[in-house]
Length: 400
Image (cartoon, rainbow, N blue to C red; front, side, top):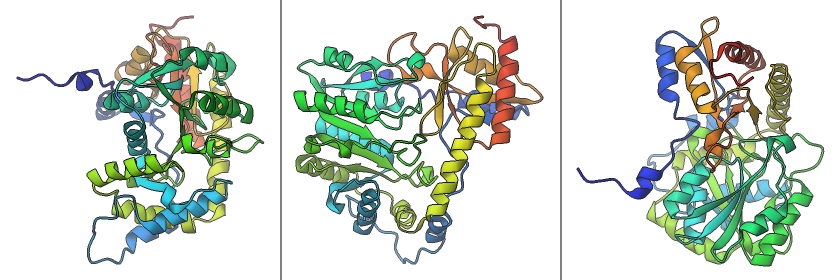
């Protein structure tokens, strides 16, 4: 039997999804599972989007243009203006989810062996996308004790080598919920400008900022316009994870030309998803977005307050998105998360968490941390935290 590729063998399993077989086995035994492992909102998709899907009036479900439907790109350009982000429709390329946008960004901008600096903990799939493109991730680790604030910019500069080609930031951050401030973003801007790097900016959680200060987009930073590659998606914005519509946005014409060729090679992004996304951008009422925003703040406060009452547990207050990384009094988060599903239940229920080790590159980092997504209603969050509390009381690997 022939061997698989080195890249295939080294591809990491998703910390979010790798425990699914254990969760399925738990459900088969009759155990209820609170899913706090994955950022799948339970928020209803906007009715205008569902209506657009139900009322498609076409005789042929054809290929769309490789770069995406022009009317959707126009709608997105108008959407960005509401956030003081001025981009033209032809500076927006529609992708199959934000994931493809990251893949295309790495492939178009970086050569195999090039390095990209990423503050960690970071969205786990960045490592997979980098590995697939032959790109080397240089992590800069932030600390839960500082609420995962941006590490000192000197740490970034220490990692820059002749092979360094970019910095990637997720703002608001997945998995930590941290939001980079104006000052932090300007420090990144200055570094990007000094070394002529790309700034890959994942801003899919833009709407979910719970601070008094406005979100600072990469496109709000002056002097590096051609260095910016913005990653976006409707998945979390409109609770449309399944339509698989993302975007790559840049003013750099060379990048646009290269990404267009990649788009042509994969033919087209999902037609039905684009129809749904355009309706969402054009017709979703402000009342929907306000209700979703308020619901996530309420869930966040409920979850964090409850977590921090458990002896030995600590979670900083996330400033955005709908995740937190919590430190638990355990020996190994991977073992603990598996044990929750295979060996524990309280009143017929258990909880599924994402071990945070998968959001770090270094061995041993995040070993006693988990990512929790507050994508359930508050009563379910309260019950899930109580299950976690009971589990920590009896877990054999408890560290205190």
